[in-house]
Amino acid sequence: MAVNVFDGPVVVVGAGVAGLVTAHLLAEAGVKVVVVEKFSKVGGLARSYVYDDFVFDIGPHRFHTENPNIKAYLDRVLKGDSTAFPRKSEVYFAGKYYRWPLHPKNLVQLPLPLAAKSAVDLAVNGMKTYGNGNFEDYVLRQYGPTLYEHFFKGYSIKFLGIHPKETHPDWAKVGINRAIIDDKLQMQNLAQLAKSTLLQYNKAEIDFIYPKGGLHVTWQRVSEMLLAQGGRIITGVGAKLIPGNGRIAAVEFGDERIEPSAVIWTAPITLACEQLGLEAPNLPYLSTLLYNVLVRRDVPREYQWCYYGADDLVFSRVSIPRYFSDDTVPRGATGLCVEVTCREGDERWMHGERLTSSVVDDLIKVGMVRSRKDVENVYLERVPHSYPIYHTSYPQNLERARKGIAKYENLQLAGRTGMFWYNNMDHSMENAMQLARKLLRDSGRPDTEESVLAAGANVAGSAAPPNRRQAG
Ligand SMILES: Cc1cc2nc3c(=O)[nH]c(=O)nc-3n(C[C@H](O)[C@H](O)[C@H](O)COP(=O)(O)OP(=O)(O)OC[C@H]3O[C@@H](n4cnc5c(N)ncnc54)[C@H](O)[C@@H]3O)c2cc1C
Image (cartoon, rainbow, N blue to C red):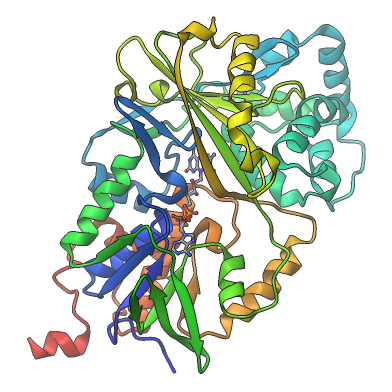
């Protein structure tokens, strides 16, 4: 039986980027939509925390896309209330700060033995053969043993909590490449490095886009647009899937029960499996503790974010919201968003408060805060399911879970957490546009294009399904 989203309400589980954008586009097309969100606020991993006049996101969060549909959608939502700026990120290594992504210029600035070794590695790396099976192989092939040992190995163990040999190469492809080669620098060997450096020289980088007032402004506006189209958003309550006859017969939340035409699931895939009584897949998620530090003065460095790989520092990254938008802090003050990764329910997760003092000490140690007296307050926030952990076996485990879920004809997985997908906001938005288009097409709206959905042109006018349009 085909799914027709005009036959009954669509329930969207999760009000993150994927859930909100899918719901908004469907509502604009005349579909009855109900969004159910477990957390008290919308935005998912792209939410913000507001403490009086300080705004913090979950780590560094900016839009970075060349997709015209995503840009059109952002224009429609933000209406010019955004800033655009180039990247300014750093890495802290052996007591010094370096620009990140590493540039040939910085390689020279590294301690001499390390610079020399890295250069030799890069010269001969093209002649070596490496395996293909894990993160370590991938990084060795791409950057050589010296940079692997000094930069990537320690950071990735500290951040992800598993050894690079146990980590799937996809983690490097999506994670490192996105973080490091936004520049599109090819570093496999010296010849390639030289070539891409030259090609790079006059090339303008695409700017980041950031909403004025904080990232949450985007999702507030999408929510308002969704509500204006008659959609509902219910926060602070988890959704429960009730299966029956190869479909999701009902979704329950609080005291409500809805019999949906379709369910868009953006919450953890592991939770969907649990609720449907499927075998529990081995698909673990990383969680993040955010220490949002309010500093009542300027800080010495002006990076947007910086990676801290050293073992003796408690955090792995610090970002500064002020360098995304200066209206996220009072004048003369600075917010420092400090990230510490963990697993939900582990020692750190349960007793994160015990690390607050070490966080401040380590900020002083790396020169970001001059003295404890400068720190006005530290807020601890716990963020579950912040990253999918890509073990080498994750593709098979994910495939099995997806097959089990595919048996429910009106259930669609979407987004980062729902699809166990290490992605960015623009990817979740693209996913939402594709999904909305597919659902509308399958329900008798063959004319729907993603570009039309993105720009919002004529969608409301031609919204009703054929039978409703005829009914006038
Ligand atoms: C530290 C960090 C930095 C990042 N930086 C960037 C960046 O700079 N640029 C960029 O583009 N992207 C960035 N990202 C990625 C970006 O945050 C995600 O791609 C995006 O937010 C994913 O949105 P989503 O809707 O797909 O998933 P999610 O945001 O995970 O949404 C899932 C939602 O489901 C809800 N939920 C869970 N269980 C239930 C339940 N039982 N019932 C109802 N609801 C439930 C959750 O609360 C959540 O709101 C970053 C991510 C992290 C963690």
